[in-house]
Amino acid sequence: MTLVTGLASVVLSPGEPCDPSPFLREKKSKKYLGLQDALAVVSAGRALAAAGLAASPPGERTGLYLAVGYIPFLERDIAPVLEASLDERGDFSPARFGAEGYTRAHPLLAFRCLPNMPAYHVAANFGIEGPYAVLYPSAGQLYVALEEAALALDRGEVDVALVVGVAHQRNYLVEHHMRRIDDPVPADRLLDASATVVLERVDHAARRGARAVGELASVEVAYAPFDPLARAPAKREAAAVVGASAAVAAPIEGAELGPASPLVALARAWEGGAVELVHRLEGRDGITAESRWIRRAS
Image (cartoon, rainbow, N blue to C red; front, top):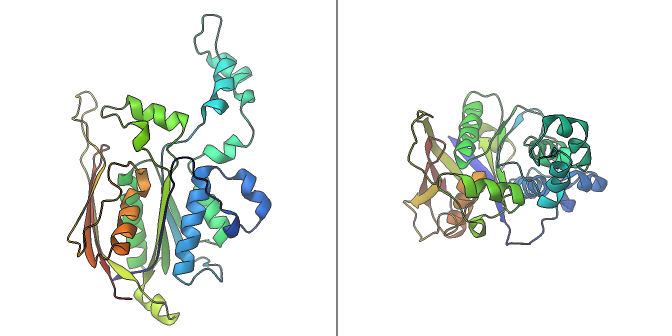
């Protein structure tokens, strides 16, 4: 049995800020965090606090399993790079990009755009020193992270596992990508979100007197590869919540939350009074998955 001892989600309204300051060990490090990093830190900090693990560093027996969304980039940041990388005909020139284009990028962008940076900021600010995995960039990959965490707990490799899903999607590059896929997603459906669940071994939770809020009863992940030369039918990453004791949206009607979607659905279901739910996902990347969660009475 895998216990849930902490759960938190953050879903931003368009233009809403996300301030990670209360969770940062060094306040001046805030300048290195992009929105995706800040979202991950806030949801992880709230989940750790809910689990009663905020007071002391989790250490080497805590693992971090994170799925991050598509690389975010603002148009004002990428425009100077592109402008300096074009040749006389207006075509992209790798030589000009290497000689001048990349120098036009703000130095801090290297810290704010890399997919592994949310994991670094979560680990550094909360003292997580155990094994980790960073997956990219879909809700299906969140399930891969969740499966890795559950296996690590079952094998006794860790006592506690943080599973984090995060996506900064309301930006130029992600919106551009979502317009170009086979099954386009309108920009107004993209939301910035993060969610974290703290999973724990039963014996470890008992030793520290932790209160379990629920359990992960099962998780299954499958992958169906397709022939890239044959145009596969477009699939939407659709989350469906069933078996709940209360009517719950899954997770937010009409919204696209990327890797945060499954755990946001879980948080909303439990907040809405669900006792048991099954979350199913069929991703456009060929990943199909299902998880079963049981909430315990408070």
